[in-house]
Image (cartoon, rainbow, N blue to C red):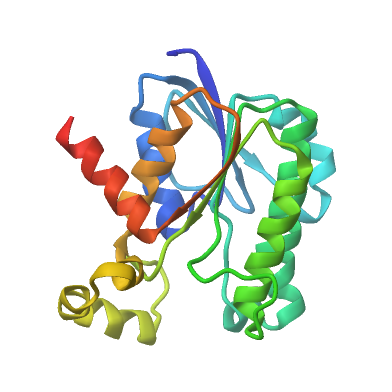
Length: 225
């Protein structure tokens, strides 16, 4: 288990950055490759940074000859500039990554979508995430793990007023969300990253989905070990 190779996309994001450090610290991986638009200002003996043109992912197929692929790509419509630009990052790139992972017979493909993802939703964001999930499940990956966090807590590089306000209110919000509503509780980005790492260490096949409350449960079980 200590000679695995991981590939990560989205290492500069909230969950991706937490996950990167977990992978580098893990004794289970002796190499971690990251696909980046621009090199991160960090160095590590395990780390290989691959400057990537995500519009030409086919040219990077050889980098997908790994054990586990982690996809933490994501943006907002505001940041992307349009719905089409958003869909490219949150739908087209992840789908192509999954296809390349399939071609290289990757053991685990792990991806973050969103709570409420629904291919039939009237909301563009939720519909795009849901459509991606449907397509991913048809690829035939050895093991597909879909993570659906609610509001992510953590220090982002960019300021988002709505998320900042929700973060401040999250302790009060969390106390009110019980039973079936528990899955809507805000979740720490590091907890999502930890669970992504944990499930990739289990050898199994099939498609698995982890809504926010399931992520919290697995994280708690890991902490109790």
